[in-house]
Image 1 (tube, rainbow, N blue to C red):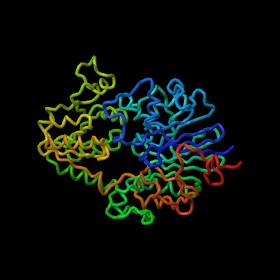
Image 2: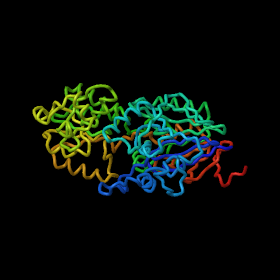
Image 3: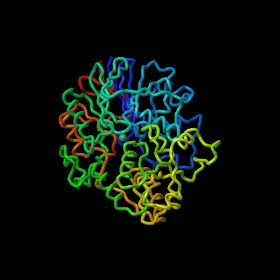
Image 4: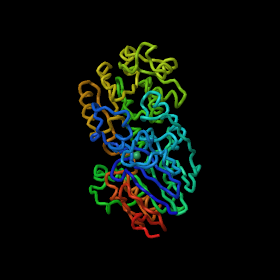
Length: 478
Ligand SMILES: [Zn+2]
């Protein structure tokens, strides 16, 4: 028996890293995410999803990987000759590092008998999202919670979740150990911001332990970021360093700048953030209190806050068929929210615009037309649409430009959420794996190992882990 490794997707894309490690009849699959590219998404807002073919279409459109033994027979219906979960003899478990869609958008497609492991906070938020219809498309199923630093055994394979962020749903890296060696997946890697120390701890731990294969996030190695830092994309110019590159910001700097904007504004301030980030929701509530404003959330986001913190956020109800006035027509989650939280009306906001900090999601952007915009500001704080790579971004700008809201953002220049290239290089040099698989980025080839070999695996191809090397299965001699 030998350890088999297969990377299915996520080499040259932002996210969507999915791979499996197999030993005998045991198998672990890391992540079930989709690479995020709204510009090429076949679902453009007009094309409808099909029902019976939902899994097959998701595989065709590369929203989920083509892997044997994890989808239901009735959903596959013989598609691509994939083995259905019901007929697989493998003992499989799936592990999710964190609740970003590029790591977990596909979990709902998986046959319910295949366990999916997530941190309990992530499960709680996903359940709240599902209640409002904002969760992943899914069958009825359970999720299995794991704890930080508590190894999980899947037969002969051990998976150790290493905490990389304490924020709301928690983020993890996974160290996978089989009888043949170790494979480590960083998940999203960041060495700056509030929790950098956790990643330096991870690095020290891996260094002591020794790693055969390291799969590493290379998001920041794209042209846009490298050119801001080095004036060249030449990998040789990326010198390992713990420090944040000169001129770039960390998360605390960005927070400070956003807060300064909020303090200086004299009218209604609206913000658009990634609404499953509960630590950020908390931050806006804290900021509002500091500047004497009332923080108000749309119902969907308010419901996650209500479930996650057990508190009663203020709610603003956009004009939408999603939120009917008639209690008989209201979905249960919305009724529950209204029974427990205070509703802030449009009239209240008009009577005192500078007294409010209001969350607005892109789909309710037209609300800006009927809110007080005099001296108002719109803080784009990493909500959807995130940047110019999304066609909806132009539309967002167009709509805001028809109002008097001032558009404010810090997320395109001088700041990047993932580890800066020099820092990632430092991390990799310290861990010094025998095989480095750079992934989760447009230019993984630019991350070079110190002593080991760089491997850009063929997607879907099986490699054998033997003496700290990954050898293509067809070239491996017993
Ligand atoms: Zn990611």
